Length: 109
Image (cartoon, rainbow, N blue to C red; front, side, top):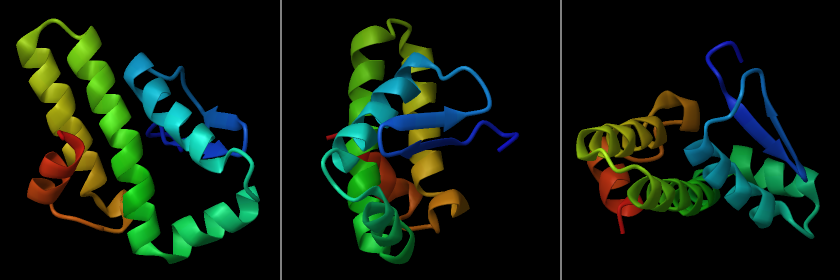
């Protein structure tokens, strides 16, 4: 929590800190994914099913990357932010559901 984890539950986004714009794009995707669904069932699937979790995160990280590509003009900053997104997706936080190389390919499409 202290490291800035962001959680979307139903129609609410929780974070201890201000949420950067590129992460807002990411979390907006999770808001849409949960819209009209039983949020407890969605979260049960997310936690228990790595394939479902990966599908949900690929969609969210693609939105984040699209935001970065559109809104960040500095090419070095853009590359660093996309790298950070791939590092995050391939991290322990998501249960290492893919490798860094896979994450980079999946979110950059």
